Amino acid sequence: MVVYSWKGERLAEHSYLVLRLYCGIFGQRHEKLIANRLNVDIKPVLETTRIACILHDVGKALKKFQLSARQGGSFRFHEVISAFFTYDTLCNVLSDTDVVLRYQLSFAAAYAVIQHHQAMRGGLWKVLEKSFEVLPLDSGIDEGLVDEIAMAVQMTTHLFDASKALEVFKERVEEVSKQGLKRKLQEFKFYFKDWINQGIPRNIHSGKTKSWGEAWEKLQLTLPLFVAPLQLCDHLAAFITRGGKGRRLHREALSLLRRVPLNLS
Image: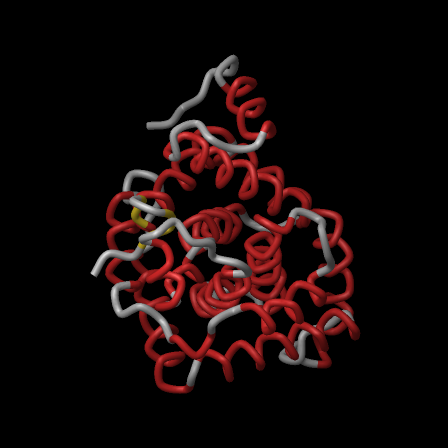
């Protein structure tokens, strides 16, 4: 079954285009900048930014959203579900990295995904709270979601290897289907509430508290480097595929980028 990101537009195609734009406009130079700011290796940063591009719209796969998508309906607060899956997937994809780095990057990706439509309209907690009033969580997830993301991953093999991320994502979707999306999102919301209020994830061992504090300080200064590229590339992808209809920001950004040499191969 096809999963749509917009009326007549497949989620796989949109996810691929967002990643392709990101790699052409930002890519490794940008990931190296982030890695240098955080004082970490570039490989997990590359995985983080690119997995976020692929998963940034998976929240649109709610069954009720898909029913309305065929008539051009909206997907209000889909980014919260997308952020949950992005965070959950990355925590497992990065399981072999240092625990501090794993939570640094997983949080950064989830934050970028939540903000890719909200811009800075509201804080993270405000957005998470509001989403529970709006999202049709009882409708469940469309059965075609994993296949749709598998298609996106297949399309992006020339940009990076996302095979591990796909396997993990499949496992996360299966678990959510068994335990219920509303329950998992509630856990996600309160986990992040504790994180924001206390400045530290629950899973950080006391022996890592000092290194986490230093990492968290660096991360907060680096978050815009995760958010801005995803926002821009998502908006540009929508502008390109939806007949050039969009906000002035989209047109101006595309006009500016046409003057710069890009590598979109």
